[in-house]
Image 1 (cartoon, rainbow, N blue to C red):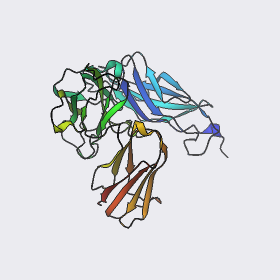
Image 2 (image 1 turned 135 degrees about the horizontal axis):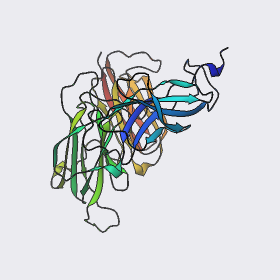
Image 3 (image 1 turned 45 degrees about the vertical axis):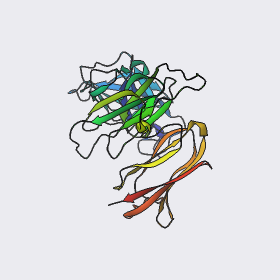
Image 4 (image 1 turned 135 degrees about the vertical axis):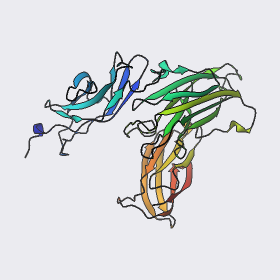
Length: 363
C-alpha cells in the first residue's frame, strides 16, 4: 500500500480576495484529511496553507508570500498588493510530511479595480452623500466586497440598488447580493434578486426602543458582493462575473407613502420564497429568514411533487437566526434528475413557521 507520505494532501479551494482598510484578505476552504487521490489521511494531517504569487507572463515562478495555520480560513497580506501592477495569487496546502498540494484557483489583483478600493470592510467603507445616481463600480477581484456607508434617521427610507452594466454572456452572468447593516453590525435587510440579477433594498429606519422617539441620524452600511462565496453561499467558489461592472444608486428620503414596505427580506420576520429562476432549468434558489426573536430553530426544507411525495431534503437540522439560501439542482435524494413539471418547496421552522413555494422545472 502506498505510504501516506508519498501523495500530498488535497488542495485548498475557493480562493477569494478582498481589499480591506489596511490589508488584503485572501479567504479559502482548507482541505479535508484526505490525499489528492482521495484516500484518507490521519486526523490533523494539514500543517499549513501557503499563499503564493507570481507576475503575469512568468509561468513557474511562484514564490511564497504568507501562510495560514491549521484551522485558519484566511490569510491577511500586509502591506497590500499593488493596485496598479497585476499579480496572480494562489494557495497550496502543505501536509505534515512537508509535501505541497496542487495549487488552488487563482485571484488576480490590480486588474480593472475601481478607484474606491480598498473598501472591503466597515473601516474602509466608501462614504456616500445621497442621492447617489449611477455610481460606476467594478467588481474585482474574485471575492470582492464593496462597503458603503450613509446616515439616516428614524422614519427615513433608505433605497439602494446595484444594477449590472453591459451585455450578459449567458455563462457567467452577475448575481449580485446586497446587505444593509445598522451601526451595531446587525443585518437589518438584504436582497438576492436572482431572476433580475440586480438587488434592491428599501428599508424604513425604525425608532430605537427606549430612546423616547429620538430623531438623531444613525450610520448604516451597504455591502454589495457576488452571490458565490457570500454569506448566502459561503462554500461556493468566488468568481468574477461578466460583465464585472455595476451601477450603484442610493437615496435617503422621509417616509411619506405606501412605498415603505421592505423589499427582499428583513431580519425581524420569518420569510420564505423562491428567489429564482422560475421556471428552473434546473437550478432553483430558495431564500428564507429566521428572525432574531425566534432564536435557534429546527429547520426542514424539502421538495415535494404535486402528489405530495417527498423528492428531496435540502435542509434538516438546527440553524441560528439569519438569512439563508438553499439551492435545488433539480435532482431527487438518489441523485436522479426529476422530470419537467410542477413541484413545491416546503419550509418548516420548529413549530413557529411553515410555508410553501411553487417551483416549475422546465428542461
